[in-house]
Image 1 (spheres, rainbow, N blue to C red):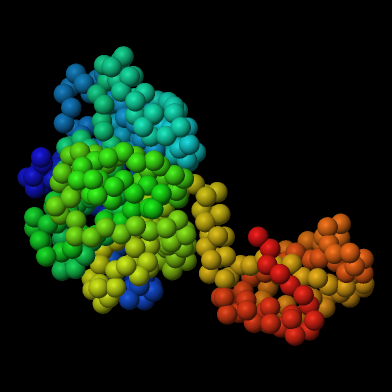
Image 2: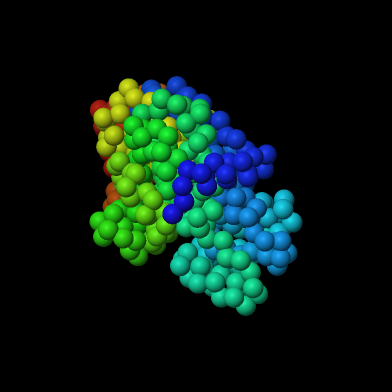
Amino acid sequence: MITLKEIEAARDRIKGAVFHSPCPASIPLSEITGMEIFCKLDNLQRTGSFKERGARNALAQLSAEQKKRGVIAASAGNHAQALAYQGKLLGIPATVVMPKFAPLIKVNNCQKLGANVVLHGKDFAEAKARAHEIAKERDLAYIDGYDDPAIIAGQGTMGLEIIDQVPDADAVIVPVGGAGLIAGVSLAIKTLRPKTKIIAVEAENVASFSAALEAGKPTKIALHPTLADGLAIPQVGANGFEIAQARVDKTVIVTEEQIAISILRMVELDKGVVEGAAATPLAACLSGKLKRFAGKRVVLLLSGGNIDPNVLSRVIERGLVADGRLCRFTAVISDRPGGLADLATRIASTGASIKQVVHDRAFGSSDVSAVHVRCTVETRHHQHLAELHAELKSHGVETYDTK
């Protein structure tokens, strides 16, 4: 079991090698949540996540002989990148085993940082098993991404920084996957500021921490696809769970839609790019499950920013749909000259903007004088969309939603 002394020693050990990330107040996020929001920007680390803290702390403590032989780890991406980068700075060869589903951006980044990348298995558990096999074959040190005491101590340095930056914080919201981050952060904060509440937040498809709390011990769960791929750990670490379970005041589970909306809110309102795992603290604030913190000072841990650009694009579009700002419907109009122009005029009269129009003559109704037109339209919100449908209906244009 680690103590505050190990975290303080880790702070000294990583100084100068890991970015001391800022924790500014966010006016726009405060406005939409009703809380006084501060964001701990560890998505600004060189490799895009908090994982560098633990990686540097663990690597720095290896023996000279082990540093020469090298290290290995299993990771869905962020720990792998952190190990590759910090290993490169220290001259330590790093091998990382990543599941085949790992985001391409994270795989490419690891390779660019000089790591030997091995893609193996359909999930983290299979990648981890293979990493242990390789470690034994090549006599490499296995660096656990979330349950190694040195990793937990390194992650805990974020808690020390938060105390310095927002000393009167009422709550700190921490995303949970393997429980290494919340173990280190909660240990640091609860030791020095016991009145500050620690809120754990999980994605509903990978809620292994909640399962452990219910069972009273780490227990394996079935994983399902999630935007928060950085939290996709089937079983929390034993060390992390032992530290965190007594220090977490509340656990919140958020949906995939809430995560998507939160990614959009971060991009649009706070001008920051975060991955799904890092969006979960904001999702928790927007979920309605933390109303007791209205008007309180709340710190969100933005743990990483390594989101695949293609995923980000899809998330933004789906977020716009959920907001009622992007919609698709099919209108039945006359196939005679002027039919489409009239439809466009009606849509424009409401202030909506047409993004795409597709005619469907072959699969329409039996009325050969009519045509089905599938429209993708940009609106301001759900009410504006309702007004658009009402306007079209009032002029005899039949519409129905299209998925």
